[in-house]
Amino acid sequence: MKRGKRKNALANQLPGAFARGFVTTALVAGLQGRREAAFTAPPVRKILRYAVQGGTALAAGTLAADALQSRNISLAMIAVAAGAAGLIAAEYLLDEKENGLGQEE
Image 1 (cartoon, helix red, strand yellow):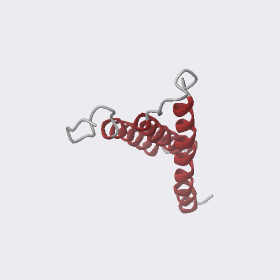
Image 2 (cartoon, one colour):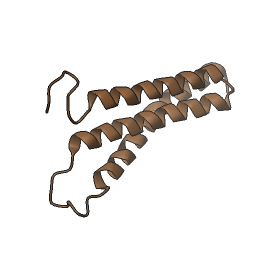
Image 3 (cartoon, helix red, strand yellow):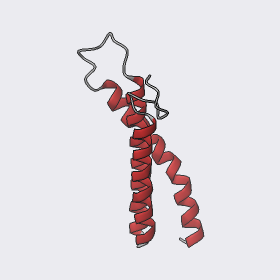
């Protein structure tokens, strides 16, 4: 596959990878440990944070794996760094105690 077509295919693959990671992580986080607390509201903000982190991790991992297959080490390193930055950003912005602006929820 030519380099330009490979980049386009990879760019088209990332949203799907994010969506898969988002949905699967949200399902696991939402249902995990719910047997005892079946009649209480689930911690929505926590589930959202985990889902965003799961989607980000899967998208970054997909990009890094594809980059390693094509022997593009610099792109793989960038993908891992961007994934780590996305995980940290989600942790900061979707924290349960504060909303990122110093205000408790």
